[in-house]
Image 1: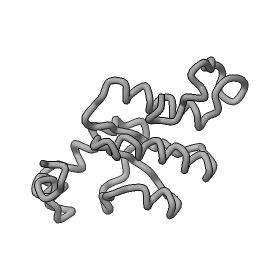
Image 2: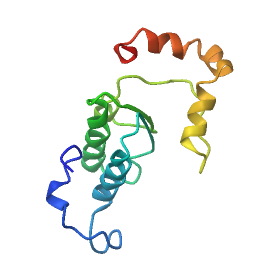
Image 3: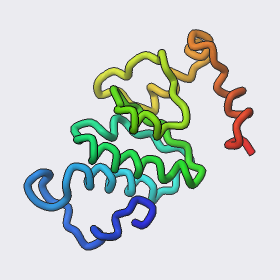
Image 4: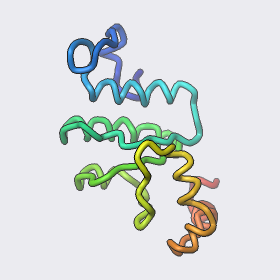
Length: 136
């Protein structure tokens, strides 16, 4: 609860979105928190800021950033981020094909990081990983 800043909502009831209970922003943060309970080494997040205003999107991206600061890897698909949101990312894969609607983000990431895709992008992700402090 502390990592995702949901302490104030620990007794809240999740009800109908937009009608009662948590806001859309709080629901997105709660969804991320539920995934973090499993303590995954890699977290895949598909468009966490869609449907949010700038303030709420920034709040959600701070939540997305928290696991990174505890040495977790987060793969996040995001379209048309504001400059503030764009700057919250450590790395970006530009030129990667857009994910298809309702397509599995984990499968998409595996395709984008395939040998053929790496050759097209001119990037060897395994070598890049070895050159970072994440491989230590």
